[in-house]
Image: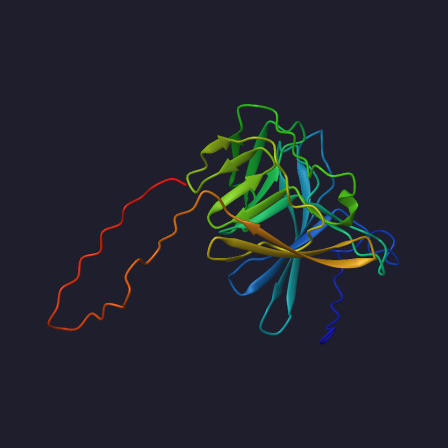
Length: 237
């Protein structure tokens, strides 16, 4: 622990403040703020989502509640009540000012404008998603929904920037994972834990990807008096 700053919200709290368990999660808005969303699974419509917006500059914050009329959603996420046994399940994602949440019946994704919840779009999947983390020890930390670049990725679907859905094989490898996936080239890094017994660092390779091999024996130096043309031969290996 490097430092600790304690905030005292008034509405983004649970009924029993002695417990830190809840169906909530926090995200980097990449706009100078952290955002927290709190929402239980809702099967009767008009989802009520608590929101807290925290300034990265001075840790000032605002709170409100977003009412999304007609929305039946899965929980926003899950955090364990045990301080010594941290567990996190990521069940929603924030991207470009929109909160993405899977519907309660798992047939569509809600895209909710976090500054104007009346601006909500339903993205039909065209099938019923498994929406799973695919692991017996999911409470150790797992990701159901994640951002990878510009894509929203679930266990068996992907959504691009145009809100087009692509079905994929059911494969949810992000078990024992509690952090975002940090990308470096074709690799993704994440961190998590197996209950309270160990800290895990995970490394994933994003496939397919393009790589180049320099077959020249010596380097070619481009100078102002030369033009250069590079030709790539693409082959599958």
